[in-house]
Length: 85
Image (tube, rainbow, N blue to C red):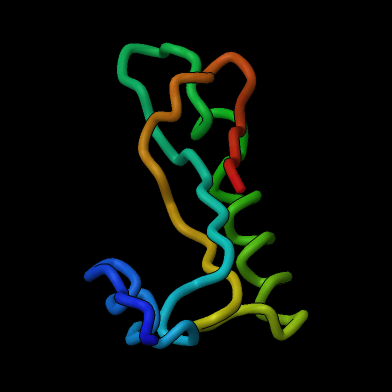
């Protein structure tokens, strides 16, 4: 007796796991106008650049591994800079 598979099972098994990232790190780099508090005012770009270089130096960058991304506002400006893993 064979077991039936759903379309989602078939799609999952045909996907190449190495073509996707296992982890994402999103850094808010939002710049607000009018002097409002924002991550960009708290050296978020420096944090993004440092994280990206450290991930690369550790050999963790690339498909199947980690991707460091820029993000818009994550709505936590007072706590900036903000990153989400």
